[in-house]
Image (tube, rainbow, N blue to C red; front, top):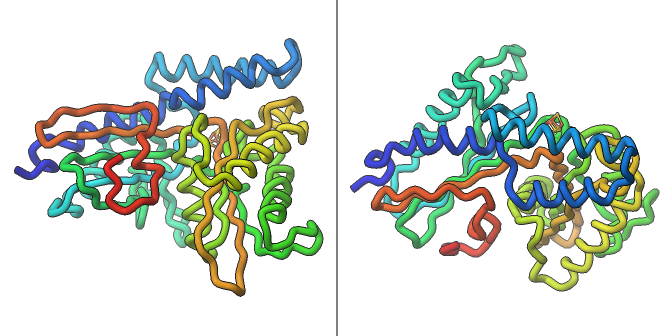
Length: 311
Ligand code: SF4
């Protein structure tokens, strides 16, 4: 039986987009609440966090987008062997169009040559879809909505970086990440989540940085040196005093997540993907029986680089 055709995946994908657009994952809400409680009562930072949290409640209650910019839709789809990826892609595109018609998503696809908006949130390589084969017989689809404002402050450094005195090592990585977060102040809608890709080339490094944004905020990096770097950067970013929406305060970032991939001897790139507080992600698993499970915390398989991971 063709799981794609048999279980009307399009309807599940529309629901996935509604959920992603209007409800934040639990780990992000927990971190925002923690940030709210650590800001001084009555301070602009405290008020900014209060407004963010009220916005989250309202969007969830009314199934309305958390932010007017529903971003680039980034899909990761895990599928069994012998599945028709063309059919899956068609269903994702149909669901995207439908979610736009229902106002779960804004019409966000703009042709950079003509300047015309397609009007239905579809375009060339838009949405962005990646397929991964796994050994499970289920299909699991996850979507992340990545806003334009935070994408604008994402950046990339080549080490060594003379003016920052950043060498080709993890301390150099730390220095450029702090520089990027400092330069993002007032833009990108803090508190942010920082995905860092260490190594690779200019493309794979940025993919790795974005890949880190799938991780749960509460998880810990299994690589001890990267874990130490993440914890230190989390503390140091929050000492920059930028605060929620740039109003000053203690909550500049909700988390820093770093991954490392091999590089060539001549290059040492550090890629930084900045995600705003509206870190919208959702995931659904559809079993061959049709049993459908929606997850508001993205399961491990979405964050794991291991080929054929069963999640
Ligand atoms: S950066 Fe995020 S919260 Fe700010 S406008 Fe863009 S999508 Fe919305």
